[in-house]
Image 1 (cartoon, helix red, strand yellow):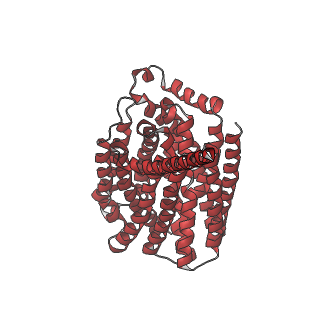
Image 2 (cartoon, rainbow, N blue to C red; image 1 turned 120 degrees about the horizontal axis):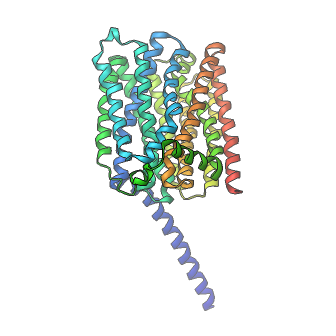
Image 3 (cartoon, rainbow, N blue to C red; image 1 turned 45 degrees about the vertical axis):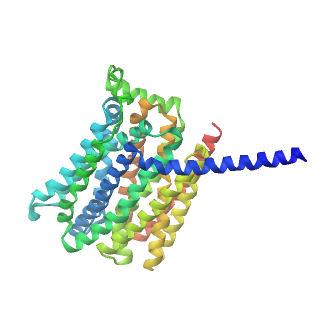
Length: 433
């Protein structure tokens, strides 16, 4: 009898320990927001992502309202993908060599000048689409410098077990930016105009730069060690490439999966104003609201991923497969409905499906890659994804203009199904490696 009581007490005690650990884990994930360094990075991203949400719709609407061409509108998306493809590998080398704050702060200041100050200084009659293309290309260079620096900074300030949670919290800023940015942009465009919206938006990037200036990454950065500058940039690039191709081949499959995802997702976000205007007959304000619904889905998924940050890599990767199937199904229904309420709900589902990919994929790279190689590996990852993105934007822009909006949207849905298949293969490969 006594042994039975002892067994029951031990069982209850173990259950309480497990429950306490789960509760403590949930609290610790949210506490990341209240740590000095990660909290400042999160705040800076929140401000700049709202700025991105404002500027992205303003840029796309400006081009489409003047040209009336889906193909010319997709050039905005194409220009955003060129610098990561062409300059990504070189940028990754110097992200690993130089202090990361140099890239984090400098990128935001440069973007404030390119997308804010310069449009303000140019008269409306002289602010042409061609000039806007040049500014967008230079802005894309700044973004190409920022993203690898941000991703490789996370392991310096966040425990390994919390990588996915940190990435999900960072993605939540993208969600909030999509929720509030396009809505604010749509209202601003309706009342003031696209150029004026871009002018006012410069302040968001300056505020982001100030927040990043207060971050303390410390002296543990691999990029700050003198030994990283002994070899040539080409040698450093070869080291990163050899790690991906020879030592950690799972990343090659991850890049292929990311490429398939980017092929469809980039085309969807770039052409969304076209789909909304042609299929639903909506104006900038309504498009902004629907884009915000996409952000709601991203935010909900970002919060949900906090519960799975300590799952093993294989199980986390299966989330990508399931979420991609959900996005594909929602896109299929979107083609056949004109009900705005249902469209809004579908956009939430699509956003949630898209939101599963990046935090999990970044976490895989961060966990499988040594700290002194993260910048290079992330740049190679981005190069593959952006190459696929530029192909997807080009192809679906042509398909939409040649065969119609429904055909283009259906093709994008198919790419999400393929992403789900590759995600399942990646999960199986991780489990059996």
